[in-house]
Structures are given as structure tokens and as C-alpha cells.
Image 1 (cartoon, rainbow, N blue to C red):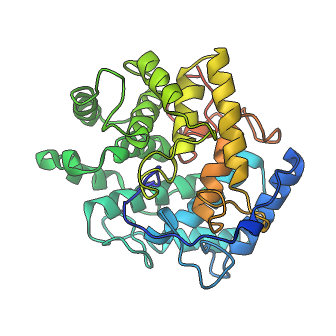
Image 2 (cartoon, rainbow, N blue to C red):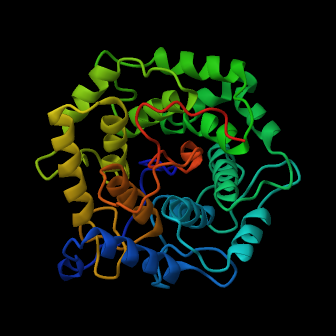
Length: 345
């Protein structure tokens, strides 16, 4: 979400597909099989992953911003599902070659300014997360990269949807989250949370707050109010795409995370998650991939978020639910509600 989160950066254009491209929802086993087949078709000989097998498609959201997005989402979904990916050693090398002498990671292709704080944070977190999912660690310790964001409170200039990047980074790296950084980020979020539980009047920002507190193992402030607004905001078609598409590109995933992690087993929550699963399936295309919205071009970023929504909704029976480091796999699709995740080693 520069995330990779839900909304990454606003103002990104996406290609739509003809209406005839949308596929009817398949059975769960077929769904997983066809999703993996799509991911494999995106694999490149150098170990990276294109946004789509279509060479003319430049990607959207995360895949348009950074070439680390596709390989990271392939890796974290593969670990969740027990899938075998092609060119594993090349993928590891693909990621490690993007690490800089100071420990940070950069993208070699993508639309972000590689020197910006947003790109530095996104790429470094994704690099660490991807390597962990592939059973590796960075060659250079990237811990010091995070210091720049707390010098002069630079983190306050970042978008709200970056808050949970920080605890995710330390969890994936297997290191404690520094207390001064945690204290500063908590205060920043709590000082701006509104009475309805939301942050930034946006489900993506609010998701990252919920994700943040789940990662640190603490109760999410105003969780009940947060859940209540998510339920109110769900559209009749099951989605949450209320704002500009560039902002709500991951809104369904974000909302389902909040409901699943914080909403308990209440019937309205279960119904909302089922409707959300139907909406995610409506974004599935005949090539086995998913678009960010119905009839949009299949994209590796959309595959992660739509398939991840279905994992959260319990529509992917083969998804592993016993992973001790599930919290390190991207944006929480594999995290189990109520489970307190200890430091990942």
C-alpha cells in the first residue's frame, strides 16, 4: 500500500477491461489454482514479477509505483498457501540487488521518486517482508533506515496509511520495535483519531491504525466505534469504494481486516464479510487474476488484496492458519483474530 495499502498514492490511472472479461466466481480449489497460475505467468526470468502478463500494462497502485511490489506479494501469498514459485533464487537476488549500502532498498522501475521518504519507507519495508517470506534476511542490517523518520518528527509528514509500516518492518526483521518510535506513532494516531474511531476520514488510514495495534499486541482504541462505521459505510454491492478510485483501491481488504480482527462473531459482521467476499470475487477476471474493481485490468497488486480478502473471509480453505509469523506477511491477511503475535525471529 504506499503501500501498498489501500490507497497508495492518489492520481494513478488504471486500465479497464471489457465487461465480458469478468469471470464467474469459481470453487475455492479452482480459485486458488487459477490465482497461482496467474501469478506464475507474471514471473520474469530475472526473478521479479510484472504487474500482469500483458506487456503493455504498466500496473496500478503498488505495482505502478515500485518493482518490489509484485515479488513481495507473490512471496507472501506463496507462504500463506504453501505454493511453489518459479525462480526462487533469482527472486531473492532480485530483491537483494536493490539494497543500498545504508541498508535501505530502492526500486529500479516505478513512478515514485526513489529519494523520497515515502519511497524509502515503502521499498525498505517491502524488501524486508519479501526476503523473510522467502526464508532470507537482508545482507545489510536496515534498522538505521528508520531513524530518519523520527528525526524532527519527519514521520508526521508521511500519509496516514504508512503508520503500520513501522511495526511491520521490525516484526519482519525480527527485532524489537523501539519504544520511543512506538510512543511517538501511538501519540500521533491517538491525537488525530475522531470520535467514530476513524483516522483521516478514510478506511485505508483507519485500517493501518488497526493493523498497527494488532502488530504491537495492544487493544485498538475505539475499536467498537471503528467497526460500527465500517459497517455503516459498506455499499449495497459489498464494497467500500466511496472516494476516488485511486484512494479506495484497497478499501474492501482494509474494511474486512477491521471487521475480522475487531468485530468478533456478531452476525452483522459476518454478513458484511460475506458481502465483501462476493465483491472481491466480482473483481476476478477470466485470466485467473483480479482487478482492483470489477472489469478492471488484472494486476499483481489487486491479486494480493482481493485474494487476501477472500483468505480473511474464509473462502480459501487451503490458506495456512497456523503460521507463527503470519503478522509478517504483508498487510495482515493471514493474522488470526485474538492471537497475540510475539516478536518474530
